[in-house]
Length: 167
Image (cartoon, rainbow, N blue to C red):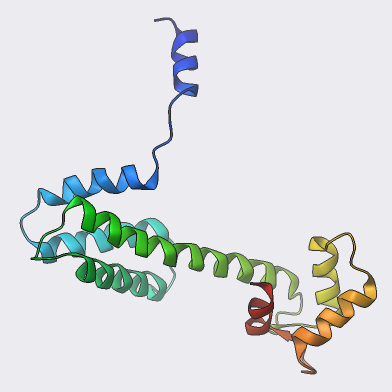
């Protein structure tokens, strides 16, 4: 096979689904001896993948606790099998999706909070809306949304309200 054929074959490589990855991992973890060790190992591995740069370790530890709790609730008779592993990881995946959304919203909020006071004032909010707005929104519409989201707080829109109205 020449290099051109190798490149074509590489481009045709199928990406594995999460379920396929979970099955492979389940098989690997079935080979271990103790359920407690397996769950600790899984929790450490997965949390390290999702929180490699966690400054104070709090997010990573919370995620590890979630994983441990999920596996304990899905594993029966002190055994991790393929089905229980996939079920546990699917429940963790729901959390990951929610957490990813939260981190995305935090980045948007922080990027537009130019004075770093933890609130979007009217000017910051309108700038954000102009960056992400629907083409049918007018300036008056943006101000009405700002007033609703800020709930008449003189400081502006808090992150909690931004998140509540964004989801």
